[in-house]
Length: 320
Ligand SMILES: C[S@@+](CC[C@H](N)C(=O)[O-])C[C@H]1O[C@@H](n2cnc3c(N)ncnc32)[C@H](O)[C@@H]1O
Ligand SMILES: [Zn+2]
Image 1 (tube, rainbow, N blue to C red):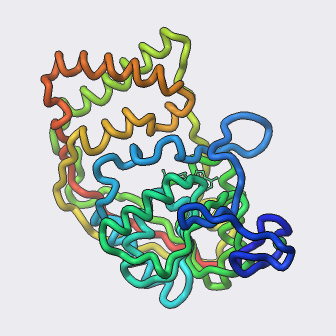
Image 2: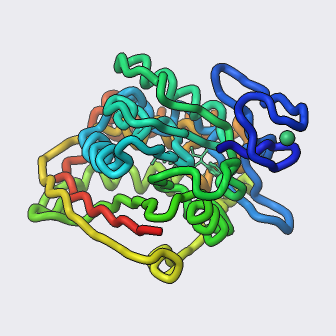
């Protein structure tokens, strides 16, 4: 079901009839040698997370979030005995709980580093990846044969790619007839988070971010917004034959301290507009910023939490 990176014909891993042997690195099949990220030039652009790595989910990186386990249950129910492609799987927030359900998975991402975190997350939770194939792959050119998988998820990645239409047509191509492109969205539930007072948390996040860019701008470095707008709904309804929507109610209260959510991502250059900030300068500016903020808000300001109420989970299934 895989396509040979060299001759583009179907192959059985790891060796193609053309003689090409797919390289393996840390248990990850290297099915693409495209750059980790492309932000310039004429062709398609995308932001891979190789430079972000563990900062993506900070101290929560090995946690299986309740929301992700709920979505994983839906994925496994839909995939049944078939194959689930977790496209741009990142740190494995869906792959890992889906693997725990015994589902057969192809997990692909452009970043080897993110795929390595996925492996560690599974190991940390005692979940076997025996039924999971890990691949470095480019979502713009999925290295799978036509009609080879049953369910595809491409969560939180379409906005990071300049040509999301192409990714959607690749998803459609690799899905079997009757296969499902599954999307999960946060939908405000019965207890919208707006009733909670997060003014101090918001003040700190906004001023940290604002001050960071003020100091970098003074040094000639401006934020670049790599975010491409895309009407997924219009594209998918035109392409797929049927759409089904379900809602999973949630609504539990939660709190996330700065040190578990915003801070590791921000300090690890984990937001895409930080992608081009030179690492040494980033270190210098954030070090000075943290020291200023400790003076202003107290040495333990990173313990300040965002208080919210979990959104409901809206699940949209587009059937081929
Ligand atoms: C915001 S993360 C989302 C990860 C995961 N799906 C989730 O929901 O948490 C985006 C992921 O897309 C990956 N990515 C970006 N461009 C890609 C591309 N062209 N092909 C494959 N993966 C890509 C990044 O490396 C990163 O792991
Ligand atoms: Zn070949």
